[in-house]
Length: 101
Ligand SMILES: [Zn+2]
Image: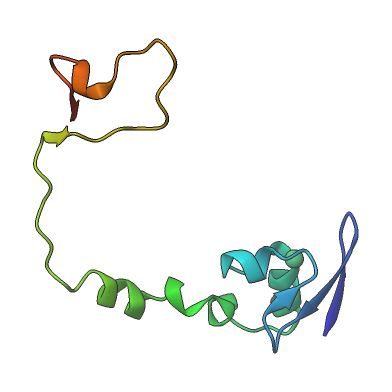
């Protein structure tokens, strides 16, 4: 357990990978307070990253093949948001088609 004095005091626990600023818990990446504590112990800061930021997980996530998306995606009969008063209904439009590029 470390107490890091920056603009405020932050409690860093290297065992549970937590800091009182909450950046470490939320992002999975070590915050500057945790890095200061790890540096004080002369350890490698990459050992304290979340498992999802490792090269092994990156390779595993991208190891599965995936099909490329088409250049133009035609979306038909999809209503976005709520209908405003006075605005014609989607079905009343002659060309109710959204094209995303
Ligand atoms: Zn912190």
